[in-house]
Structures are given as C-alpha cells and as structure tokens.
Image 1 (tube, rainbow over the protein chains, first blue to last red):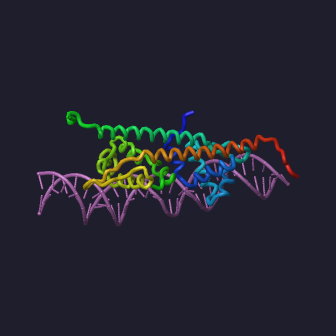
Image 2 (tube, rainbow over the protein chains, first blue to last red):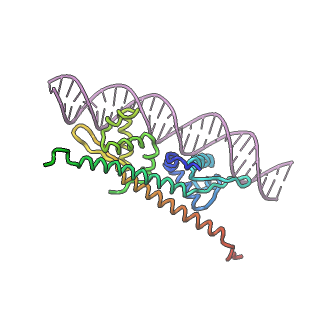
Image 3 (tube, chains in turn orange, purple, red, yellow):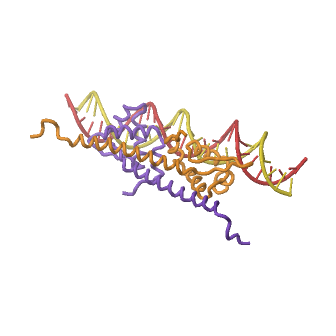
Length: 112
Length: 112
DNA sequence: ACAATGTGCAACTCTGTAGTTGCACATTCC
DNA sequence: GGAATGTGCAACTACAGAGTTGCACATTGT
C-alpha cells in the first residue's frame, strides 16, 4: 500500500540495536521478541519497542503464531529506501551542476 | 578520502532540520551558517551544530572565505550511502531466499 | 488444574542531543 | 578607530527515546 515514509526508515536504521535486530532476523528468517532478546544484551521489552519502530518503518512484519509473535525482515523496503535516497542524490546533483553551469557561463556582453 | 561511515550518514539524515539544510544548500550551491539560519526557524548556533554533524558524515564541506564559512552539499556521499543500503538489502534478500529454499526442500539426509 | 513460557502495557530512570543564550574574537566597511 | 557582521566556544535548559522493572493476561504442555 502506501510505502512507508523515507523519514521513518532513516530514523529506524539510525540505531545500532535496530540494525542488529534486522541482521538477526535475516539470519534466522523469523524470530520472536523473546528469542531475539536472548541473542543480545537488552531486555525483551527493549526489543519489542525497537521492533515497533522497525514495523512503523515497514522494515519488519510480525505474525502471531499461537502464543508467540514471529517477526521477519522486509528487504524490499530497504531497497525502496535506497532507491529513493539515490533519487534524492540525483536531484541534488542536478541542482548543483545547474548552479555550477550558471557560474561558469560568461556574462552577457562581456564576451568580445 | 575514507568514505564516511554509513552509520554516520544515517544518523545525519534522520533529522528533519538537517535534511532541510541539505535542501537549502543544494538550492543555493553555497551558504554560510548565518545565511542558512535566517531561512529557518532556528538560531545560527543550532545550524552550526547540524552542519558539524553533516560534515562528520561527509555530506557537507565548508571553506573559509574571509570572515565567513561557506558550506556546500556533497551529493556523491548520499549516492554512496544509497548504494551501500542497496547492497545491504541484497545481502538480506539472499539470506532470506536461502532460508526459504531450505524450508521448501523436502527433508533429505535426515540422519538418525 | 497448574507450571512454564510468551506477550502487552505502564511507570520509571537516564543519557543524548536539539535548541537556547551569552560573550569573546575575527573580518569587513565607513 | 569604530560599527557591523560573522564565527567559535561554553554553559544551560528541555525533551525525546533507549532501556529498565513490575505486573497482568494469554497460550502451551504435563
């Protein structure tokens, strides 16, 4: 549906713990918050909060399986974000080269 | 020289004010901290700090011109970051598809 | 029925950082 | 020289968010 905000993705990725979570999730394919917490030096609650942020950014989804919730990573969303960053870079390059071109243009009437 | 940490770039971009700064800089080509501050609802000092973060991430450079310091954006760095995010996404995709393939493989070699 | 495991929510602490103000120093222009 | 403009540094406030603890509720297994 609506692809998640680039803002949200950037905020989500700008956190080492969350990147570790994504790393673990792509290693394992699927994991619960409790399982993830055991593999890192934080409590389950902290993991749950991070997963919430990642979910808001669209980088992760969870599905309920009985008493546990299994999360998995969504690489396509990261790819999305990468593409949009690239597009943004292109816009900036265009702007800057336009300015540069203007600066290098000989002023009208100054040319013999 | 050494390409800036992806971490630093993500942290730098995960801030609306800093993205606004980059936007202004690519619009204008070059600008001083004071000039930038006049175009946004924060003080010059705040702008200076943000420019520091952007500089650490390699997204901006400053050069001294007389009594003022003119900053300009570096789109190549953003492009760098986008590429590395894309590469990371590729790694994740590979991992996940490997897991998926394993899961779909009929169990052979189930050794007692 | 009961113990074990897992989730969900709320309140709390604490550190990082975005933003401010204030002042000293440097450079340009009159 | 003096006013204006711009930068640099330091101390301070304030708020977001990373992490914790504690407890109630849900699900599984014996």
